[in-house]
Length: 141
Image (cartoon, rainbow, N blue to C red; front, side, top):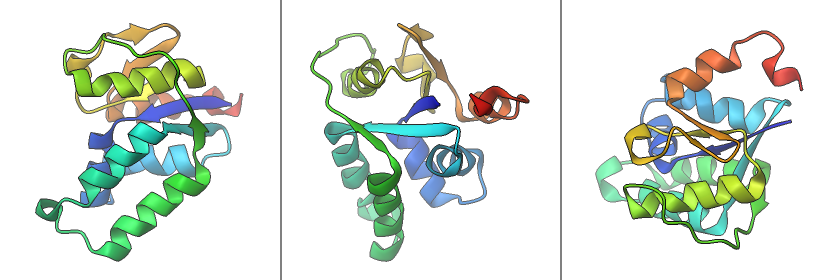
């Protein structure tokens, strides 16, 4: 099974534009039998905080729907190591989760904040991930 960590900006973009590439990433991560979305408590708390911001103008039902799907379908991990790798310190939680989950991919809209790869985790844009997911046999592991 391919494990993937998804940055908050992908979740927000998926919520704002349901037909966009970030929405495809989230749908794949939540529903494809060959993929497993990985989250930590810190990541989930950030998802919850950010999608609830009034500026995004999403109903409580919309926010709860996406958060419930993540709660119910994600693999929950509890990172033990704190990292200081990203140019934006708030993004380190995603690498911590990826390391603990032994994630294959971390998908973000801000690749410049991350190294190109961390341990065995490749850092990809939403488009790169969707294109890669379309590779025959890749998700059939």
